[in-house]
Amino acid sequence: MSKFNPISSMQIVTKCPMCDFKYDKNNIKVIDSKDGVITLYLNCQKCKGSMMMVIMAGAMGITSISMISDFMEDDLDKIEKSCVEYDDVLEMHKFLENK
Ligand SMILES: [Zn+2]
Image (cartoon, rainbow, N blue to C red):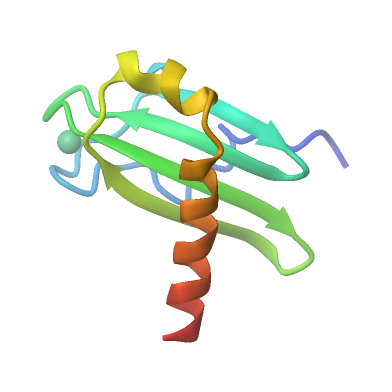
């Protein structure tokens, strides 16, 4: 099996949830990638909306969590220095599973 490629897995979400504009690969950035968990930042060219997406490749297949984010690309540096955002995403996932 070839190396897990987050961009080729983007059929999960390829369109902006706000305006339905199709994402361009150039607007998808990999923020973090480790242990089969990939965090992506997507930026819509049309409505300028941004979104965070976490993709987990596990035994159950690929799970993805996406959420609208209101931070700008310039803020990515801050996120990289903080693990809090990351934990929040996992907590949200647990919350959704329990629903
Ligand atoms: Zn959009």
